[in-house]
Image 1 (cartoon, rainbow, N blue to C red):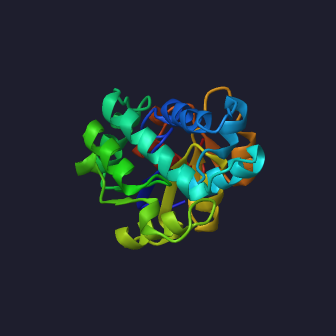
Image 2 (cartoon, rainbow, N blue to C red; image 1 turned 90 degrees about the horizontal axis):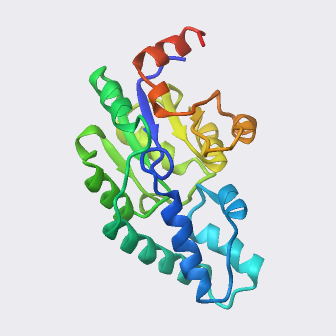
Length: 224
């Protein structure tokens, strides 16, 4: 496994923002008399806004289009992101600095809209570490389709087979596999990672502290 570039998802991988997005989801749904349980939200992580709300429109019989609901949640999430403190995930900054220092090319590829991606990157001060940022606005299809990751590889000028993807969602792992990339998973807390492995993740991490140049070298040589 020779790796030249590492492509990171954003929400739930680099920034602890999934609780914020869950709260924003129910803020929107409350306007239509609905509520989404956490256990039903978690399997939808990684989906594009429109695909996610298309599922909720069908589930709850909502009298609104997925596109309208998606825009409402984007606005609600942006308001929360701007007002609240955003914290990096455990080990994220050390991971990025370590990989960049060893010459790995880094990209961020997220199902979020570009304005959300740019806000998070600015608030965490990560802009100088990434060669490129890819958002849902840059591709035709979201995860589990491979478009986001293939666009990241194209911009990095790196063969997809030499890219490693870090994902917290099963949809994201599947997208990485479809792109011909190696995927490692960072499952949510209390998730055993079985679904991520079934989707193609070669390893499940408990923290980004486990992802450093030495680890990539060990994995490439077949070590644990």
